[in-house]
Image 1: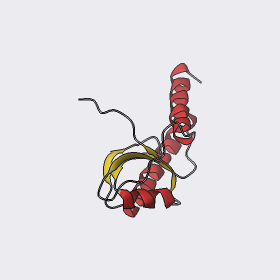
Image 2: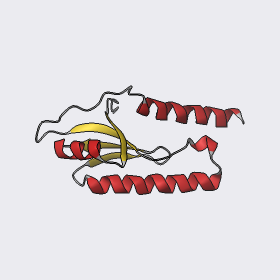
Image 3: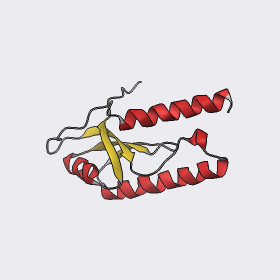
Length: 120
């Protein structure tokens, strides 16, 4: 495996590990009428792209997009900040009702508070 593929694989594994090991904080109850930014990790069997061939990579990206669509259908009030192509995640702004739906959805593996700083 070439250095670039190893680097991409390592980066993908770090992203997935940071989303599943609880390095971010779990969103607290959002007061009624207030919103908060969250990162949603989708449930499913997704693999780092470095482990996949071209056809499998395209199929996985299609599956990620479909899983994102299904989750977004559950929370129509959510504001989409970012849809990721290669990782099974969404960055959203949600109200209390949407947060509760996400936390109880079988389509969602984890919901973490988005603490990333916006630049510019």
